Length: 112
Length: 205
Image (cartoon, rainbow over all chains, first blue to last red; front, side):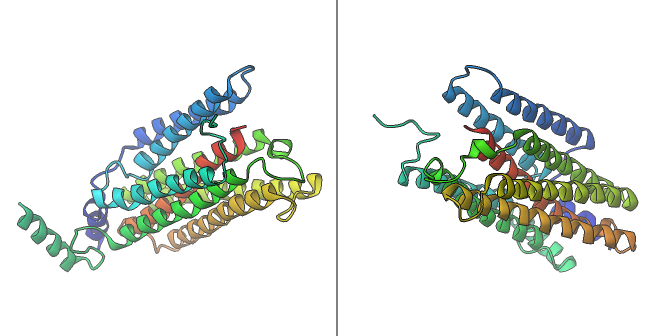
């Protein structure tokens, strides 16, 4: 039965996991990015486009780090990746479509 | 090569009913499929919030009411809880069940703290700004989005506490690695949803 757990971990879709050291390093990077995100808000005179772009880029990086390392998707089987990334693309498309439909050009360039 | 892989997968399916012909664990695949569907669910709610942003004709605006330091603290709590979750998993993999149980408990407590912060935030919006679900488009879209996220976190806390209880009763060991891994996937998912909400709803002006 003990072998069952190992089997599930190694053959049940997980090709391997990061080490504890990697987890801690990822957590430190996540903390630094979060601190920079919040600090960015308090920079006086920063152009709105730069603020929005940098916040979205930092958020995307944090998202990737958690999904890739903490959720082990970086090491997982292609089917697992497809099951998550496919709907994620649809979710992003839903957000963009709703914003376009309601003319909510908060993040997209406003048409002239 | 393909035949060998198929034979290997079938051999595992015979040994372990949770491993299918693909060689993958059904429970883990099911959780990833659920998380994919939840992505679309939260995508719709975030899209709705953005579509209605700045279109309220009454009530306070988002940046009149948001408490960025408190929300940043909540974001840090969820990120830290993701670390304790993977440390619990690593400890369980080494069969250090008591250590794993302590990390799981730490994860649950940080999740509970997050929920309490959210309850305080909601209470503050209602009592200090008269902002409720029916006040404005902002109130409706904000409370529905963050409320559903809070409900997900609450569900995750209960799940983690059940795992802690099982570990304390000696009913959890490394054979249950996949069960804890699946709970971890769910927990990290609520973290990544908050990463998106924190930036898009709270930080972007």
